Image (cartoon, rainbow, N blue to C red):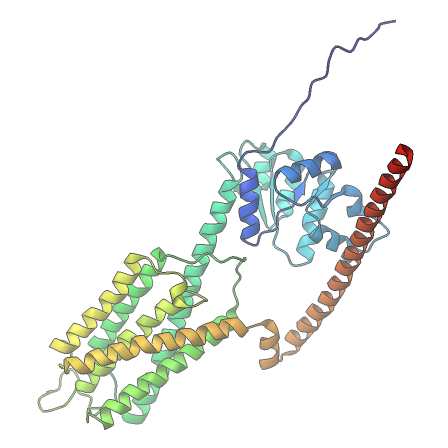
Length: 428
């Protein structure tokens, strides 16, 4: 019979990548919850989580298939936990499925064949560097560089793109509705409009303003973004109505106070003896007021919280300088006194600050409850009731979990005191 002799022991360790802890921290700061799913033992998973700066709320795979718990309770455990250990491919798929049923967008990373089902099921499957062919074919994104820091770069880039798209949509809808309201009314009521050349020039300058949004210094949101169409349309209409009110104020003020009558002359008619200075005033106002508002629509907060890029600011201010000089020195439009032109520009700037405050307050107080109250459609009322019921249930589950944790902590404290008391008795 062979005899075995213990010569020594070799310690093996598979440490996380050096950038993993920082990547997880940045994801958490951006509102992305990170969960670790591993086939290793529970004690190993807790140690790795500690090294990565994660909490140690790790559950074994048995919690995912516990027949004594409802699916809602299991889902709450999945949401609350920081990770799962001793899992198999079916468990990874189960975690993704439960989170998606709760309406959560799930991204999954993996590199092996056993990760392929979960990568396919996730909203965004990410195959890491050096992955197998099965993982690569199941994933939506394949990382070509080692580590996970590329994911954070993708998050920041996508949020910057989203902010620029929302800025463009809000500005464009606001500007269009403003044009429609003002010109629809003045054309019907006073048979007055700007000449075609000035309207075309406004469109060109507006396009220059919107083009530079693509290079703007977008503010990266701290939480994941999503489209809120109702909020976007409402905000655009409110800003457009406010801009229209300012346009009508300019129209009637310069007509009644400075006697700039709303005369209109066709392009092929003689302009001799006809006062067309109101066209210059309204052109300068309509060119400047919406352009200054773009400094506000680029952010959900106050305009000074995140400064625009130099190119963005230069183009916007440059278009206003061109419009101001054209109105003062004439050419495509009749000349007006420089003092009046500068005052119009200053009013547009001050009004944009007022509209910025209006925008911030709307964003601040907007909620789904507000939408359901203002436009109480049956679908919205039902959705609001479901949200409230789900929130109540979630609060109850979390309260139960907290109570269990308190009992566990108290039990641990009592056990510690008892052990200490026993040691003191033995010493005596």
